[in-house]
Structure formats: C-alpha cells, structure tokens
Image (cartoon, rainbow, N blue to C red):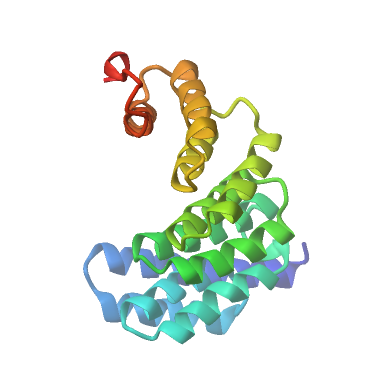
Length: 212
C-alpha cells in the first residue's frame, strides 16, 4: 500500500473511531457528523458505509439505507481493514441488522448477492436461509443451508438450521432426522432440543419425552 492510501485510511479510521466514541456518549448528531466526514474522506470505507446505512434505516430513509448496504457488495477487498473475510463479515453485519429489524426481503436481496460473490463463508448462506424462511421461501432456504453444510459438514449449528428449515417446509421425516443429528452432535444445545421436540410433536405416534 502506498503512502497516500495509508494516510487516507488513517484519517478515515480516526473519524470512524470518533463516531463510535460519540455514540457511546449518546451524542447522535456528533456521531453522524463524524460518519459523514469519514465518507467524505473515503466513500468506499466499508465500516462507515455499514454504520451510515444503519443510521438511514433507523431514521426512516429506507431506500438510502438499502442503497448503502447493497453498495458494500461491489466494494474492493481493500474497502475493509482486513481484506476479503472482513468485508464479508461487514456485509453479514448489515444482513443481521436487517433481520433484527424484520426487513427480511432487503436482507434476502443482500445475502443472495453476497453468496454469489463470496462463496466460501457459511454465515452468508445462513443469512440466506434465515431470510428466505421468513419470506416463506423454504426451498431456497434449504438449498442455501445444504450449500453451507458442504463447506462445514461438522457444523452443528448448520445442521440444526437445516433441520428447522426442513420442518418449516413440511418435510417432517427429513427434519426429524436432521434435528436428531443436531441434538446428537451437541446434546446441550437447548435450541436444537426444542426444535426436535416441536418436530416430534408433529408426529402423534412419536414419544418426545427423552428430548425435553
């Protein structure tokens, strides 16, 4: 990296840090002003774009917030401090924000594009699965989670997520098998045990007492 890039990055990081500091003090206007200065210095600095997009959603500027979040997808890896994975994680933070706000359609659009660019990160496929399930697109959710399990076949959380998506899709036999596997992989996982209990209760003939 050249000297000019380093100086620019240092300046934008300073303004971004100032924004976080002002937020911690409850100074919302000062925090936003620092974010705006950061983006004036470097309009492609991913952390600042993430924060400003969140701000826009929270103050009701939904189209602008969505535009900012989607712009993360076309940024170079250098837009994040630590390269490709850092950028993918920032995109995931944007998706998580949308999920928490119940904006599943926007989240699904973001995650769909993300997995097309970043094909090796299971958390992005999980984002597709979560948003697709909430939108009633269970087949898409299942496909995304199956793709994630190909990357990390021993990831118990993914097994549980896939099992629940199968349940949501009405594929009870497949769901029971997958959720039982999730419980077997981690018997202490309360969520997996509860998901399996719910699934088993859909089978009147099944006794689910051992999973409670």
